[in-house]
Every structure is written in structure tokens, then in C-alpha cells.
Image 1 (tube, one colour):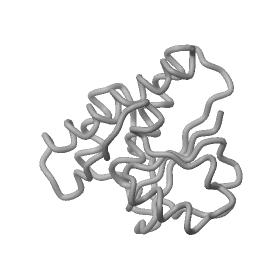
Image 2 (image 1 turned 90 degrees about the horizontal axis):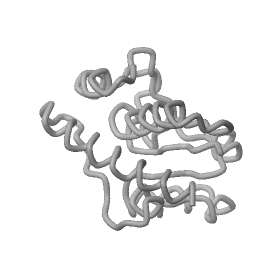
Image 3 (image 1 turned 60 degrees about the vertical axis):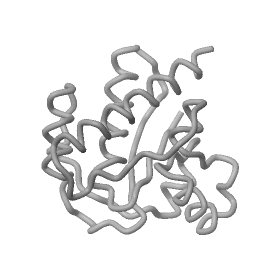
Length: 148
């Protein structure tokens, strides 16, 4: 299963989600899974936000090598599931790539929940920690649902 996480700038939410999912699938020994991330409007080549790096390092994941990339057709085609952070992003991605409509869902939907993942960009370390907690919670629920 190739999961593509998408957020706005690909420096906060989507790289944290990518790191959390890759860490968790390795810990669970789930073969055949791969998480990647991209942004709708990234500063291409920008590193992950400093607070995102700090929060992920504390959770056993390293974002130092991450560089932002723009959502593009090859990523969309290669993904089995495209997981966005908000309902508004779902609308944007499905408008940009109508053929991918059936594989685009919000992280909350993937977890069987509702709501959006708040953008911590420009916020405090605590904002990033809350965001990572929310992402991690939803990814764990999504994986648990996938195993059933």
C-alpha cells in the first residue's frame, strides 16, 4: 500500500504523517507499505519546519533529510491512497486530479473519524506536538482498521 500524505507546504503535517506511518509500519513489520508526502503549494526543496523536526525526533523519526515537493501526477498515479489533512484539501486534490477521486480521503476519514488536522505552521512547539498527537492518533486508528 502506497500512501501519499498531502498538506499545504509539505513542511509540517504531511512530512510528520509520512514519518509516523513509516515508523509504525516498520514497528509492526507490515511489508508492502510505503508512505510519502507532498504539498499543494510548497517551497520546493524547503526542509521540514524546525518544530516538526524536533517533535518527530522525540517520537523516534528523523525529518532532517526531508525536502518539500509539489504534488504532481506521477505521485498521484503511484499512490494507492492519497490522504489529505482537511476536507478543503480533499476538494482541491480531487478537482486537480479527477481520476484519483476514489483514492483521496482525509486523514480523519481514513481513521473512521471526523474533523481536520489543524495547521501548526508558524506556531509554537506545543502546537506542533498537538498536531503530531492528532496525526499519530488517526494513523494508529487507520492502521488498526486496515488490519481487520
